[in-house]
Image (cartoon, helix red, strand yellow):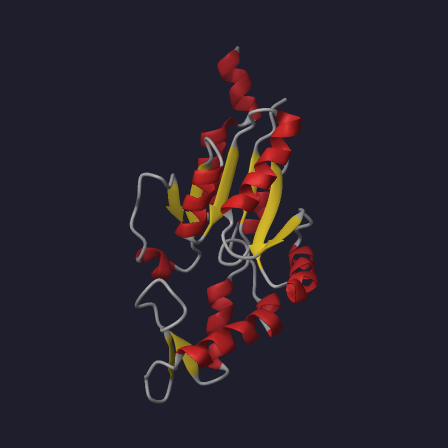
Length: 215
């Protein structure tokens, strides 16, 4: 039986990264604006309203990732959707994270209820998605591949590296997602795991549906 592969980013797709960052910044009398689709340049001093400099911004984000992101909640619906999809799809998690934070990332995901394999990556994700897809297709032939990420750059890189891949740009934060414009390369832009689940089911074909169509 064909078993589709789902490669899924973690931050802002499974883990509510931006909501957790909002809490982290509030504790430091700072806030995150949503003027552009970026973190750098959008962190402001709450007292003055002025943006902080890039160096401090980078340091804060690094500190959040090392000390506080593991406290963030799961994106609503993500755990239930992935566990349901795991009944007929292979799930691989792909996250850009420093080696020093890998253990904490895996432990956080396990506490949230996910024990899927995690691949730690740095930089462009396209080659990593290709490696996962190639390994999967050694067993399952021309199995469909779906990739979910909040970064359009990573998604388009995966499209360049993997033939026939289906792409979902998943951004949990409503305001950041509203800044993203549709493009023909991306099959779905959403922050709703019900929509993502339905898109995956339709694009790769649930086994029961495939059997029905074949009969």
